[in-house]
Length: 339
Image (cartoon, rainbow, N blue to C red; front, side, top):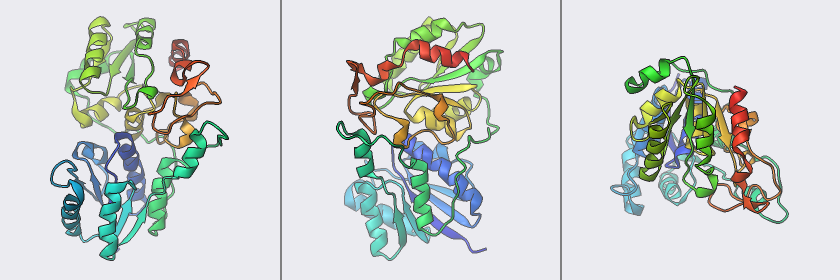
């Protein structure tokens, strides 16, 4: 069987790159002859570990690959792989410059359709067209289909992998409690549930029966998670403790993940862990629900103003409050109790 090499481009954001990994797992399983060259930021390499016939090539957009000259340097690096096809799953300025180099050199390529017009129809205030859009993972798959590869996504939760137990969390993970991951932060503020609500959650579910693990964020979020960890004996902070591979290992041993519409949901999908997600300004109809996750596990309150945003960077006022605050702590408590 003749091997073919496919260059796959997706530089960011974290959740979008994680969704690419879910698609590539299925593509690799259905096409044994494909060798994949994945180009993304080095911190996302862990998402692609274990995918057969995949080489990860990092891009450093702030250093040697910065600007058109840097992308030309990247182009010459990638040519050495003797690529047959180019799949641009990003379709931003940087990726378009890179794919232009490949197109000019005669490579066969396909580019992601982001359906920007349809997304505007879904999020505009007037004459909103409130219908589910094609999912992002299917749009990724469409790129490979355009290159001539058949690809059928099953949209089922992946079977859990046997991943190691992070050493520092062995005791907490082997206790006879329900293990719940919490990813309470997001890049954009209108996707973040009021943080004080989590105190209600931690107080409602006792340490004798529940253990919580906090994921994601930078310095400010680390301080919040550390405060929770100090205040509640059954809450553990993982921010800055494990690295991406270790976080995936830990998530794989949880009973459930609770996340905003953010990368925590997509990381849960990568390791086959069920995820309860909380939605406000954004909406699952935009196509970003975690791969294999269920809409029944989306906690949201429908309102004519929702969604106002695809990425959560625009306010969505519903009945005088931000859309995500339509979700009450009791709704989350009830969902956890139903597990």
